[in-house]
Length: 541
Image 1: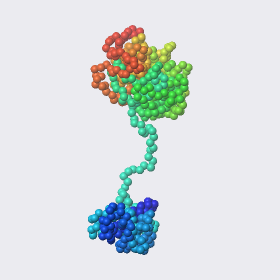
Image 2: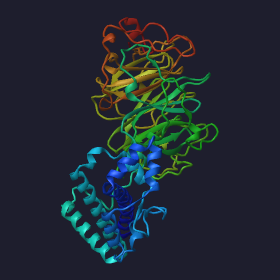
Image 3: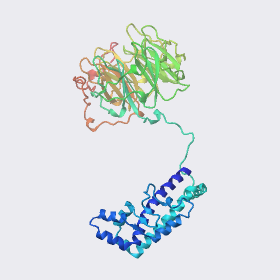
């Protein structure tokens, strides 16, 4: 504060000296006004008039009196009142006469005639005396440190009197530091992964609901010989446990998944996880916290099941950790969060399903191989793991040829684990193998995706409810050679999308074709009885 006050005083002293010098010239002009007017009138040009004024020596009693008073001061004498760098040839000379400088002469030439009135002359003389007094005071401040301290005290006391009220802003000494996650806006994201390992995320709001049988929007731009085989929905702030087909698990946040446009392929997942040759992420569990009373229930393609406490996965390594031990030729096909109070359902690609109490499987460590959950015949595989939430739900099954159906869950009776199961949907030549199964409610919505990257969103209420042994209705219209590769259920709390007005009387919306191909033929509404209940192998319909 002392340094600031000193610099301010030096600045004010420099300005006062410059102003005092100008006023000295005006005071000299007023004392010799008649002679000044004569010289100016006689000069042919202003520069010559200015030079004539500077060449003469002038007498001014008021200036001589003020400067003689300065010589008696203890602050440096007459020289202390002169501007810095002023030539000694200008100003009051030893003979008592005054020599005008260039600045003074220019100010005199620019002086208006009204300044010659008696009142204006008194103002000039009065201001000159005030400036001389100011210069003397500023010099005294710089010469006496006690003056500086006194000024500091007075100024701080004035600041306290003006701004001494209580602070209205709150200062938190231990404020929480922001990290990257704090800057991420919570929103629902659709994450897709392709067969060759390309991954990306898109906001769920980019997709709109369509009627059953529509062709949808293209979900992603696929390269040749690649297709989408995994799709899931999660909040940006959720954790994701990413399980690979080799039984390893990797940890990541949803917002860390790179976002892409609808037509982009995404980013290779090998850049996010250190996957081995032939390893790919095929199961993802979005979770908010690792609770001690929760479990991760897993199933493999050869019918093995396993239950492991969720907290065992709370601190995975960057290189991944073992989630389940696998036999030769086996791979992980599903995983779900359970709390020990639900039934577990396994579905095979042959259209069979088994339902049993999850407590039939005891909790095991991460590296355990598990126990048998479903008995399979040669060439069959388990394609879905479901955890039943209540008897008011339905099971939605889908086949590779685009057909599917909705069956009440109570038609799937509970049996012991390790059995062959019961019929879930007929796998006829029309339907093909089962590719997906999920739990739904009438007000739910689902997403269907083909191996060519076409995505369709539709309401479950538009899919007919049928018995277990029927073949189902058309879910999506497919071209020749195009197959349905996946189905994803969307919970009601996660979806707030209404049908567009132009869909009210339409069977669906045509999406963009991939690589110039068409999205398929007209949708099947299931109104033809022959499409919904053909004869089954066991004679039932």
